[in-house]
Length: 84
Image (cartoon, rainbow, N blue to C red; front, side, top):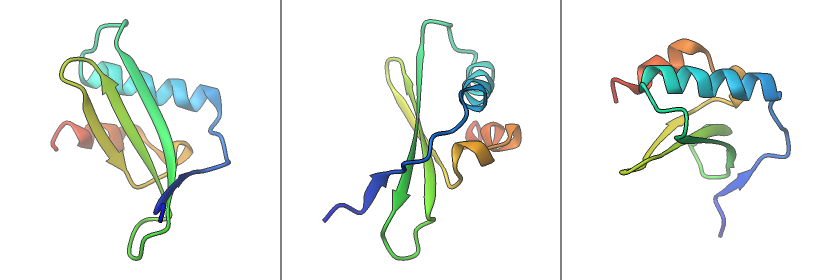
């Protein structure tokens, strides 16, 4: 049983780039480091309907989740990742 699936809705490219810029600035990443953003729909009970999974592809790689769609993410959500 697949409890997660990708959403069909795509975030505006400008918003995706803005979120990636916030992540890059927060973690002081080299411009060559790949940042992946994926929106997932959760079908599990008590799970938020959509979450964004952030993967920072460096060694070691890091992964974070924000329980919002990409379009809903604000700069303050990104800053809270540093505390995790």
